[in-house]
Image (cartoon, rainbow, N blue to C red; front, side, top):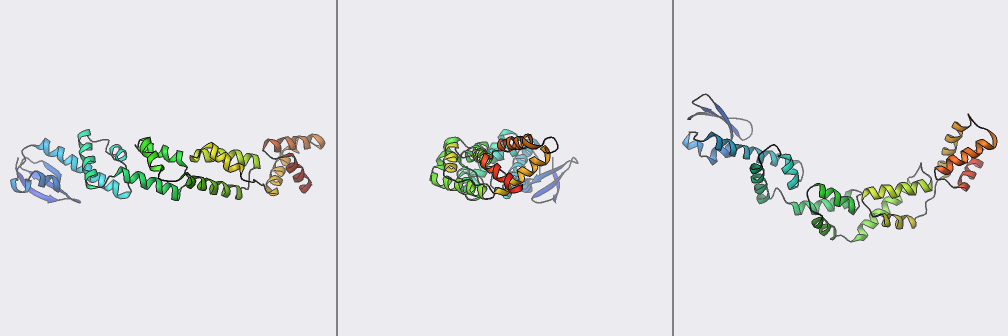
Length: 253
């Protein structure tokens, strides 16, 4: 089949008009690779199409990488619709050209999580494993940081959450902090050790607010001693101490 006309298309693609009426849309890389500008003849359409698919996957990956750094696994998943051979060729080229660098990605990911997010080491490990990294490589990356870095982060997060507590009793807040920090990826022992060094004081406003809420509901059903008993039970269940509740009752009476 002879090429009778070339027409520039979007970006770096061309429409090639053939003498049989077909139109091939090819990347300029494909045209150069098969020397079509000089030969002006198509000998193996299937082979040309395979190479053009490879170029399509390559440019698609470059565009994807321009938005943010990606891992090899992310590129493979992104190109899932392409043949395995094409994906392997693209990955090999991206690695060679430096667009993909998993070691650098791993280091930058850990650095950013430590600097920006509240994540502890365990959550960083989980997230990197989801991105295709093996646990040994991740732990090697984390070992570049002293454990004190994470303990200091943990201490600051807990301190802030205690300081900005406007809702929970001391017991409930402690329970919540253990669950939250564990979900953030910190070791339970480190969390408890940190909390044991903190004095969790609850504002009287919190207790009084909770007292008024409970009172408003129960006063419709009970009175006198029974009302007081049930209010006490409800507030104890919320984690407030007996003394805190008694003081709250005294302040709002």
